[in-house]
Image 1 (cartoon, rainbow, N blue to C red):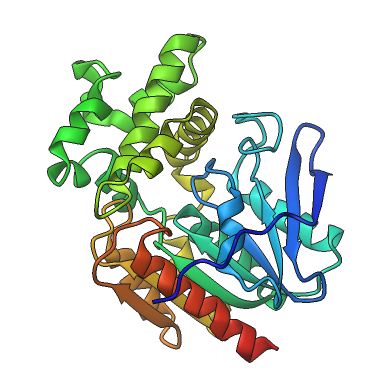
Image 2 (image 1 turned 135 degrees about the vertical axis):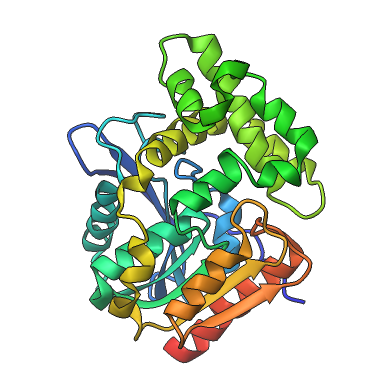
Length: 316
């Protein structure tokens, strides 16, 4: 079974102004003459970490990480102003132009798979391949499953903590209730809601309980950005049309795509990956029998590293 490549440091860091308000953190590592690959993180609002460099052979890849608007090292932190899906797609194009890259491989998980697919459908001529994990199609039923009714049947104990910041009278529409609190002027209420929202996702992300994952989601800096930005996007249906990703799959049918998904993914159930696979019949679907949603579960990591190694051989 494959594991992550050894730790490496970034070789270049950039602060890229993409609007009058937003400045993105962008970093490079690995081989500056290697295959360009863009790591597209989840959330929205999750941010990148040094661990994300380790899915790629640093001798073969020019590894590019960036924090999307409002999260990680990008500024302003947790900002919802001018923060929407088309802006993120345009940001990726600005990064590509800034780094003088003609075309690149995209590697995205969860919301990162959503954004990677949307970018590829907007700019198919710039994408030489897709490695996607924990597919999230951002349909209404996908949001309802995790934030209203579905995953709560599997994690009823964790669900009680998720409900705690919201009055019982508002439990019929938890997404709206959370959005209202997370955008309220009450700083203490915002932080309590952000922690409950983020911890719910962290607890449900792995097949076996993982305290390191939960601790990451509990970090106030991470939790506030993730909860506010996710609620902002999801209350607005991710700023895309219903079923937009599946309907636009013919635009990217020619792009080699590898899909990795945990059999027991409770954040983004497997039916989403299967629907994408059916819409992209030439893609590869790897169902990991003993994994949930996290990229750092051994079976998921194994498949992702094998996928990057495979692309390194075919694109060399």
